[in-house]
Length: 242
Image (cartoon, rainbow, N blue to C red; front, top):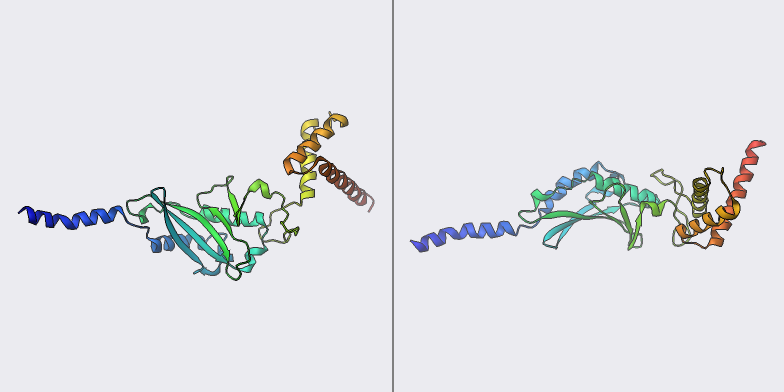
C-alpha cells in the first residue's frame, strides 16, 4: 500500500517542481506587449510592424528579466537624440509592466527596450529601461548614458549637429545658444533681473558657473556670451530699423 501511495504522489511532485521552475511565456508576453507598442510613439518607426519586435529573457538575481528589441527603419534616425529619448520614454510608459501572470512561481519583470537599425549594423543602438518614469529616463546610445538635461543642447561627437527638422518637434539648442541662455538666466537670478547688477562681482560669478555647468573653460564661456550678445544686439537693432 505504501508503494502505491508513493507512486500516486509522484505526478503531483513533478507538477509541483515544474510549477516552481516555469520559464516566462514569451509568446504570451509578446502578444500582450505588442498591442501596447502598436499604439505607442515607436509604432511609426518599426521596420515591419510588430514583426520587428522580439523578446528574450535571462535569469538575474533569482528572477527573470524580459528584454524587448525592435528593428527600426531609417526615418527613426532623422530624430535628434532628444527626440529619440521622447520616443523611447513615451513607449515604455505605454507598456503594461505587470507580466507576473506569464512567469509561473518565479518573479518576472521587464528589463530594457532596445532599438537597432533594420538595415545597417553601423547605425547607433538606443535603449532605455522599461520601468523608467517621466523625469528619471536614461537614454543609452551605444554605451553612453544621457539624461534629459544632458540633451537640452546636443552636439554630435563628429561635430555634426542633428537635423533641425526632426520629427519630435522639441527645441534642441546648440552649445552656444545653451551657454548664452544659461548665463542670461543666471544673471537674472543673482541680480534680480538687473536691478542689483555689479559687473566686477557678477560677471566672474556667472562665467565661472557656466564653465562648470557645461564643462568648458571660463575663457570659452566668456567668448560665447560676448559673441552671442553682440549678435543678439545686431538682430534687435535690425528689427527696430526695418
